[in-house]
Length: 241
Ligand SMILES: Nc1ncnc2c1ncn2[C@@H]1O[C@H](COP(=O)(O)OP(=O)(O)OP(=O)(O)O)[C@@H](O)[C@H]1O
Image 1 (cartoon, protein in one colour):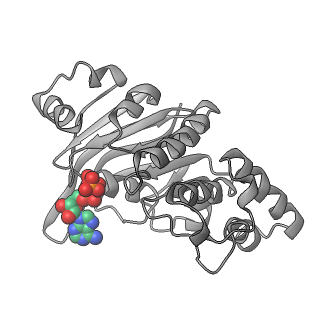
Image 2 (image 1 turned 60 degrees about the vertical axis):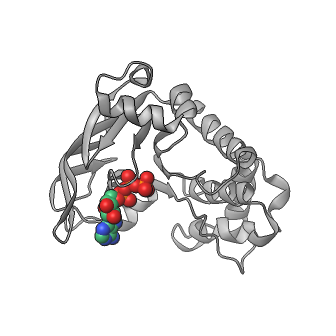
């Protein structure tokens, strides 16, 4: 059963058409790798799913929310959809625990004790149980990114969107973050990840969506990375490896 559906999505910035007739769906529990060259529209597609961008045509449905509906309840959408970016966006003046409890306290109005308990459980999940009292600047990039993932998880999202979350990290820190994402995928979380980590995509993606010039050019299970049907995907993979 699909939990995310994009149907003929169009998105332009002024005169520039960035997404053309983009359609794909994600089933509950599926891990989707969204791949493609720089500028092919991957981040824009992800941002449209969370209504950080408003689409110009087509439709998007996520966890039962019609994202293109002008009367969409944004707060409810954002509770169901967690999104993590390349830049961790943690508040520098708050401890890791305070960063994580902010959403549960202010959006979900959870009692403080419950929010703290939750923070410790999600920090444990990402291997940062001992960093609750630290400030972001005291953490490595990989640790900050894992804290950002924990912050998203504290909102108990039904789906997670990852936008090139390891692009700013060196290989060792990248590995730490990918292991957290892999564990999350193993626990049944539905996710879309925009990634340039082809080996990672090959290992954990149930479905690969290859974008080229604002269109879904090829999609299928991870075997398309081994045997691409189109020369564009073939070229892309050769350049990435
Ligand atoms: N807010 C914006 N205003 C104008 N143009 C934009 C905006 N956001 C994205 N674009 C343009 O849309 C196109 C697609 O960008 P997008 O970031 O979605 O690509 P991408 O595939 O994620 O690339 P990358 O791998 O480099 O992040 C690019 O040409 C970009 O310049």
